[in-house]
Image (cartoon, rainbow, N blue to C red; front, side):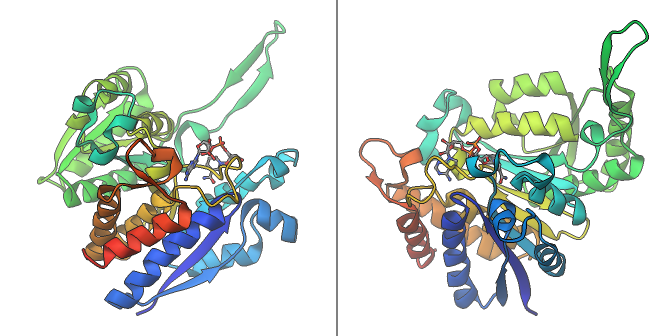
Amino acid sequence: MTKKIAVLAGDGIGPEIVAEAIKVLSFLNTDMKLELVFDNALIGGAAYDAFGTPLPQQTLNLCKNADAVLLGAVGGPKWEPLPHAVRPERGLLGIRSELNLFANLRPAVLYPQLADASTLKPEVVSGLDIMIVRELTGGIYFGTPRGIRVLENGERQGFNTKIYNESEIRRIAHVAFKIARKRHKKLCSVDKANVLEVTELWRQVVTEVGKEYPDVQLSHMYVDNAAMQLVRAPRQFDVIVTTNMFGDILSDTAAMLTGSIGMLPSASLDANAKGMYEPIHGSAPDIAGQGVANPLATILSVAMMLRYTFNETTAAERIERAVNSALDAKVRTADIYSEGMTKVGTSAMGDAVVNALKGV
Ligand code: NAD
């Protein structure tokens, strides 16, 4: 059966890095008869320039009809003066909510070849391989009532609501337990159950769901401790599941343990494992059009797509091994370059991964 992928290259370095990910997927498509088909559409600033909106209806339709979406990045200085409603980033938020992508998967993997890129000591981060599962469509970022009001005494008051229904917690917990099963079978749920009732419920529901996964070792941690442990001894974690805001903050911390924004992929999934896959970095306008961006985060994003949406584990592992081989061969884009390595551009890095794929 054919597998439909909507390809949204976006703005800035988006088209350059997405081209390399498609190069890798196309090679595997032929090599392993994966039956992938690709369809392109505009999003972000590019879509605004062509249609006056960052998320045209035809792009949304294409994404809805696809099995998975590959996204480059959106945004750039050209579109910053636009009103918020038509800013490129709105295109992304629109797809996330229209496709109900409630589970955000952010791996933080430190490649041993890049251990020096981390700000932490190599002995603390070497071998780091964490998956953070962040709830993406609920919690305090969406809860109501919210706003800024003026009190009777004339003082202004800002307020937000952190709210989770049991069903929202249950579905993200299931995603996290299933991922833990595919990894080292350890899940740490992060909350603030000692202070916030909403996360007391979070802890109760995650514990209940855990009874269905007796093979996964479940632990709980308060978010302040989790932040500390992530920089003190990050290798204790396998999979972390947490709320929208805690996940936002902790996943950026975990990402930076690896020291290289150009290496980190992400996935956002719905209840049926349909997903949008994208690098965690933005459109990097400062280097756009120069052919120097690191395409590995995007290439690793399509490995996630093969694993989580298409269940093509072997193909996913081949990409991950090929990235490792390319790094072993001392090939580096500028952002991860160090002395003694061979500096290459975006396209040559993609070629290096395809070449490595032939041997793994
Ligand atoms: P950024 O991630 O685009 O860039 C931060 C720094 O990292 C820059 O110096 C950039 O050159 C570098 N960098 C990023 N990706 C790289 C890569 N693959 N290879 C080499 N270097 C890389 O963040 P920013 O500068 O804050 O934002 C730029 C634009 O991107 C803004 O318009 C912002 O809104 C947008 N943005 C989009 C997304 C997204 O599409 N998901 C995410 C974050 C930011």
